[in-house]
Length: 338
Image (tube, rainbow, N blue to C red; front, side, top):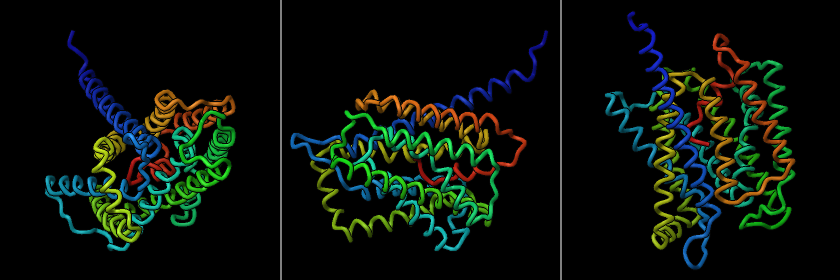
């Protein structure tokens, strides 16, 4: 009996799915571990901490801009801007503030706390979506947003006593860390929503937007480093600590590689599949961080994590592909890994 013709198609889809899952999970899990290592683990015999967050942004963006330019040239697509340059700059400024808040927050809160708090980005996305795009969300979206926020609040407010930050200053440290995370969520929500507006307002190829926003980010972060007087200090630090240089180079590489896998997954399987993979990736990242860096979890934090991930998985599986993508598509169009 002849083999069903649908079998090769199923095998091909399985191979593509495996490629997408392995690519996203590996690059973003490594990215998360390296973030925490660079910002929270001392280097050298003198136990020096790397404190130049904007330098990490600069290295990440210059790598991504070079690769996106290469992709555009290789595909014989024009490098000309599709939208006015100032609109790319708006996304760039917001994205720099997002990433800087993310790196700075790691000085004051643990990576598991930061990763779970990122799940609460639905709320700022919904707020910015209503303001900028005049979107309307369903009761189900508001319910999930409330449950996720509740779970995140439990995770942040009831940290285990043994989870100490190298920059710890008691309650002041926690308040500052949470403030930075609120800044991250607000700027990240604006970034993804404004990117969504650019995609819908212009016939824009994704690598075109990545190229121009990252080029703007390179220039702005370079100027910021000069004004802060941190450029030479950061270069001196990585020149004295070669393992830090390697960590930053690898961080920039996996951050750039993740862009390809994110774009490939959304284009091939859609936003719902991508949302499921990203939720799983966040869970794996938290577990690995707890094991690798020895973060203890309180029972309240475990309950908070169950509420957050249970709500996210429930939302993903309740959505159907027949419904027009709203919140998921806005969330997945961010210009960098989170």
